[in-house]
Image (cartoon, rainbow, N blue to C red):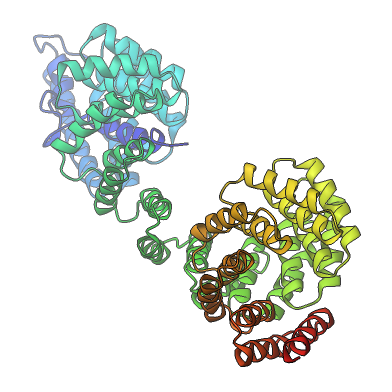
Amino acid sequence: MFRFLLLPLFALLAAVLVLPVYGAEGPLATSPPAGQAAAGRGGPGLTASGEGSPDLQAAQAAAAANADYEFILGYGEEMSGNWEGALDHYRLALKSDPSSSEIRLQMGAVLVKLGKIDEAVSIVGDEARRNPGDLRALLLLAGIYSSRGEKDKALALYGQVLKLDPGNRDALLLAGILYASKGDYDNGGRLLETLVSRNNHDMAADYYLGLIYFHQKHYNKAVSCLKRVVKYRAVSGSANFYLGVISDMKGDAGDASGYYQAAISADPNNMEARERLGQLYIRSGQSAKAIRQYEEMKALPPGSAEIRKKLAVLYIEDGNFAKAAVLLKAILAKDPGDDPARYYLSYALEGLKRPKDAEVELNTILKHNPGNIQAMLFLGGVMTELGQRRQAVSIYRKLLVVDKDEPEIFVYLGSLYLDLKDYGKALAVLKEGESRFPKDSDIRFYLAIAYQKTGGFDDMVAQLKRAIALNPSHAEALNYLGYSYAEKGTNLGEALQYVKRALKLKPGSGYIVDSLGWVYYKMGRYGDALAQLDRAVSLVKNDPVILEHLGDVYRSLDRRADAIAAWKKSIEYGDGDAGLRARVEKKIEEFRK
């Protein structure tokens, strides 16, 4: 999940390729220039006391001087970044002093930089065989093997170094990291613990040991190591990032947010820290902060389409459909085949009250991907919104052929049949849904309505009570049961409690307020009923049933003119409902008598 070892490992190895050869101010202070080293050891034809003919000594001195000269020129080219030029000079230096370990090792390091790994292995490996006790050669060769993924060979060489020098910092550190990169956290941790115990200010050892503990889920130990890194290095993006992840997993949103922000401050391009911070804001309901975070991510390279899509979803959830649409259209302009972006665009268009445009986008998806379940589901909803219920029914029936594992399909199709007054089909679909998803409270709710429409009052009550048992916060089921009892004039005390529970869950619902007023009316509490129905009328404008109820209350209060006015409005806004018109006209006629 977290690729913490790979890049830092190679960065560290790259340093090791140079550090064993260079000192703080250029060539190692412990190693004289190449030619001097050769002369000091005794070059070809020289004894340790410098015996030999004057001509031979002069020739060897000239070769040594030339080796020094070419080595220094090579070093200068290397420092300026001209590695090919450096290699040319080192080759000339080695030609003048073929026995120099320093030149061979320096050449090996440059060959690695140039990607000439096989040649580097050859020259450094040869040096390691010639001088098996040379720690610099062993470390450099181990680094080369690591760089080309031959981890076991590298670990064997680090083992040789540690036999020669058990406290060697580079070998302990790099072998520990290498073991961890193989998933061997026990051996890696053991080596790094040894290093930390000897030097508790070694930030690299603390950092990688902290990550090993993280992967072993020893989070408290990981926190201790990573906090030391942060303490001794004020700007430490990676350490702060992992401290944030641990705090996030523990549910400490405040600390997690602080650590993620510190990681971003250290590295503004740390997209994983930004992503996690954005997700944290989403989970904690801080949508404005989440949007700002994703807007910043969008502006950073590479500005991926995935980040833009997540930002668009945040805009949609925040109700900013226009911004979401602009963003998603830009994504689709670059990649017309991005179905998720097109799906979100249809959502944004529907939010902008442009269902026809949403239909076009959804059909574009289904044209080349006819099995896209989510697109079909949403298209069914869009067609319902457009009043094309029969077409929506056709879509949901097709869905049921290919996918019966989504309870929503049974709910949508069943509710459509209810709207179309095709109660037999509604009952059949919802019964099948109930058999497949017995714990789905929405299926039971709509099944209850189907039973009510077909005269099965007791079955309706049973289904509503099961829906409420499955989901005590199902406001619609609570309201429907309370209202149904009131309509029947039975269990009015129980009805009142159900409706009050529903209203507590949805205090701004005019329909539930209407149910409360209707229960009061049935209980003969006309003053309470009038107060609630007046409020319901203010919440839901021009609803014919609520206006009918209001007229009934006025009638009970003997407010003749108000009753007739309310009933007439009920007929006016009844959209040609013949049953409602006949019922209300009869009330007006009887009251006038």
